[in-house]
Length: 238
Image (tube, rainbow, N blue to C red; front, top):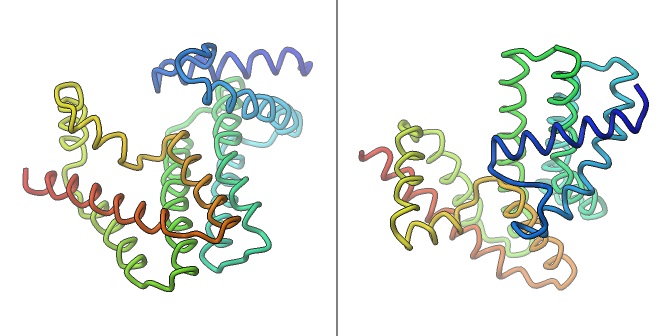
């Protein structure tokens, strides 16, 4: 397949996916200019790298596993405070959607979609989600030496693991956001792994690394803790 054809199909596939799954129109500048700019970068690299994987006959699941590997590498960089590589870690997290787009697109055009592949893709998203939270926490911890940050991270993780009614909880939040202003604020500050929120966290880490001012990330983790605990506590009580 020629690059121009592969690129066009890849772009159209990603645009359709985000419009159906996330209600995001990647063609529009008005809805979210930042997302538009971000995905110009994501899609170009996805198309170029995807064609290479396609010609090498690399399976979609292998691509997803590679994506998980990179997520773990990025997290390790921050957990062990490898400061010489922190830009690499930020770049991996910033570019996480590249492989996520490629594996799904290649699976569809080669008719290699599978239930296992879908679960593996979901697992990859979870790894990135907690990878970013863990990285933010250890980034702040290595500067403040405050063990409360680690405790907060553990509580966030445990509250998710013991959230026994996630479906009802998500539906409740979705319904209430439509009704009350307070829930719109709640949703705005809740870290859910979405691109804009992830990139905001990465920007905070970058700015704090450059300025040696680490107060904001500390309070951001505490904010996430309060929101997570309140959300999951509601789910358990209900």
